[in-house]
Image (cartoon, rainbow, N blue to C red; front, side, top):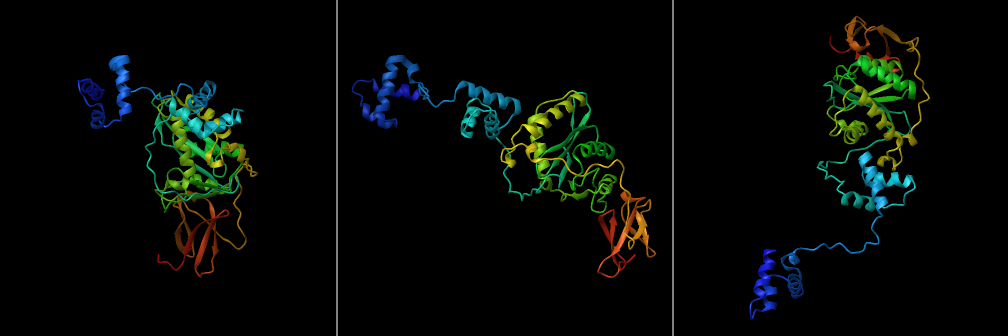
Amino acid sequence: MRLRQEFLALAAQPESNFSQLCERFGISRKTGYKWRRRYRENGVKGLADQSRRPHHSPRLSPPTLEQQVLAVRDQYVWGARKIKTCLERDGQGPLAKSTVHKILWRHERLASSAEPVGRPCQRFEQERPNQLWQMDFKGHYQLGNQERCHPLTVLDDHSRYALCLQACRNEQTGTVQQQLMIAFRRYGLPERMLMDNGAPWGSDREHQHTPLTVWLLLLGIKVSHGRPYHPQTQGKDERFHRTLKVEVLAQRVFADFERMQLRFDQWRHCYNHVRPHEALAMAVPASRYQPSQRSFPAQLPTLEYGATDQVRKVQIDGKIYFRNREFRIGKAFRGYPVALRPTSVDGVYEVYFATHRISQIDLHESK
């Protein structure tokens, strides 16, 4: 503004060279004349920058559409692609993703992302539901009544269907087992479950099994652990946690466990049946999931081994005795029988619990 006023003051001087002034101030003669005309009409106010918005915008989105876009955004905190799919599913459209994005941007509903961009991860997906369930605890946080909440999540790998989202008071074996029994009774048994190396389903390489994983093995469920310090192995469940944080937990404090679980139940239904999922070509997880044909048994199956197996009982210290030697199997198996089966290598035996290979022993190793 000061430069424009100075330009016009100099241009108003007698015998001033208007063209030369325009050149020295770095503007065209057309712009110089425009500033002079506006100044004569409106004074100093006429020198301010004016809006470049057109008087007529025939391609502008109708107000009703903008209201619908903003309503979905405010309810679910979704991005343009999911909002587009949701509105088209309700009969509004077809819509362009760019149109929805512009509406969000125009109404300041978009936040800049500060997430670092890393290397792309190697992705995998099971071919059918219940081949693999991913299980983990999301980081705990404090409720309004000062108690700590530990959300337990279980996700089907193929469909991304959320099988469990439970607000737990702790991360103990009994708590997890109770929630898994509820999920098993409702959805059946998976073929395999993937989890990290933390309690209550893992510890370290020397103690890969816990009472919880032994219980899963008894049910005929294979157990896998992710690579230590490599959360990408459970990428789908980790991504689920991130979505849970953004859409449910961000900047909110829930009064107690009852209100927290109520919100979890509402959001889990939305996640499974309403929210479009980009990894599923914008379909909902429920469209790809169906319960397992393997039902949860009323009683744990009895351990039975073959006639040629050499069966040993795991002692209270987690060891078995075989050929006048003791071998460590793991305290999680204490009280249970295990089967030893010879391999093609003389003196080397594989140790089985139910139908699962859990260890290997070598009679040639030094005591």
